[in-house]
Image (cartoon, rainbow, N blue to C red):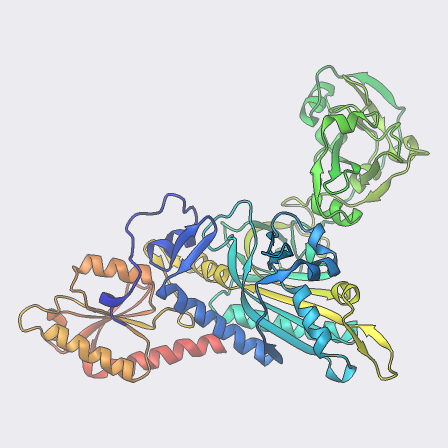
Amino acid sequence: MKMSQLVGRRLKEVPKDAKTISHQYLVRGGYIRPVSAGIYSLLPAGKRIVDKIEAIIREEMNRIDGQEIMMPVVLPADLWRESGRFDSVGTELLRFKDRNGKDMLLAMTHEECVTALVRTEVNSYKQLPVMLYQLQTKYRDEARPRAGLIRTREFTMKDAYSFHADQQDLEHYYQRAHEAYERIFRRIGLDNVLSIESNSGMMGGKVSHEFMAICDCGEDTIFASPDRRYRANREIATAAWKFEKKPALPLEKVSTPGCKTIEEVAGFLGVTPENTGKAVFYQNAVTGELIFAMIRGDFEVNECKLGNLLKVPELKFADDSAIEAVGAVPGYASPLALDGSKVKIVLDRSVVESSNLVVGANEADFHYRNFNAERDLVGVEYITAEIATVREGDPCPVTGQPLEMMRGIEVGNIFQLGDKYSASMNCNYLDRDGKSHPMVMGCYGIGVGRAMAAVIEHSHDEYGPVWPMSIAPWQVQICALDPAKGDGSVGVAAEKLYRELSGAGVEVLYDDRGEKAGFMFSDADLLGIPLRLVISPKTLASDEAEFKRRGSREVVRIQLSGAVELVTAEIEKSLRSFRE
């Protein structure tokens, strides 16, 4: 490819809406262009990278016996009604009616579609296990798309689905898929990826892992022990908290005029936040059911844990009228005297296992001292559970060491779905005795564009991306300085080298535009191509070229006669390092 023909301008200025490094360089380098919020076109340089990532994914999916298929993006709502997700998933699922008035949707994931497909093609234990995968467009009507390709509305996803006769077989295959994911991310240059325990969310199932590329701009919060024996997403992370029980003191009602927040109450009464109980009211966003959660004042409620505990897919904060309707007073609430038939009460372990806390009195401007749950809630129906959010420095539940907090980009996820979809959608198989059973399923996803962005976040300098050889848009770039000067010998030599490298199977981008050196090298940095050969009148005088690796300051002179051999050897060495 010659730069004079390449579609995709490099931009000097940083786009105003680009806050992350990957977003900035993807736009500035001519890899992507915005069409609408969270929707992008891929330009040739970006498409070449995506194609290479997809090729690696295909190799690894085929290696674990995957069979590639292609499912439609537009699906009938009836499939999602079979699984129960059409009405339970929120507005991120784009629903519409076709010209005949039939309910349709744009698929954000394909569990229902693949389950419907497999139930028509597989019916015997002799055909199991089987894994089907695709690389397909998805659409998620994201409320706040951000960070370029990290959070978009339309995106390319590799999603795979495995079907098994039993849980044991699923667990065996799940491990194979986990190992394949580790190979994929290593091969595309993401050696900073951690596999962590995660929340299954709307996907269902009990076991799931996310693959997080560690970087400061990541949206997800991760907690890990220093030795990495424990790793979990903030949504489900836990800690080895220990709470001290002391002799219960008499319950005492005290005046706390105008004190509603934990800080105000603690300051007024001369106690610390850990000596208080924090009351938070939620509602089931679908049914409106009121939920009262209480946690020690120095903790925050983990809404994901609370939702999972109560099997509520979406929580929202309750308004004051709903709180007052059950006899509680906003800012002064506690479980004391609440009617468990009108509100579901959940107490965190930090409340139940602590003593003598300050809590609301369900009366404006008053609190109680010395609240002890086991003594003071006799006759009140409540649930005790862990609903606290882990904090940096909390003790690891495995090692006891202080937990470290990191940020990460989720580049992949895997789930043990069980029979969530197969049971509801009648995807069954016959066993040896002719008895019918729902198949046991697994699900495995990778965001292709997000992976490309994560590579930039992990591998860049102040001038642009530093692409790994395995996914670089081109392997080597030739820069010809003053190609038409004098007798045009520089242009002739550069053209000859371009043809020789191309003939040797090397992917070459030849900058034949005759631009000034600074402009040409700035463009080359934004393209991030691993190897660079510079031919100028000065180097040509000794039949040489300058050879440089992207990201290195070292420049060496090489003989043009040996350039093809040197470059091909360098490429093979680099690619081998990603395969091993």
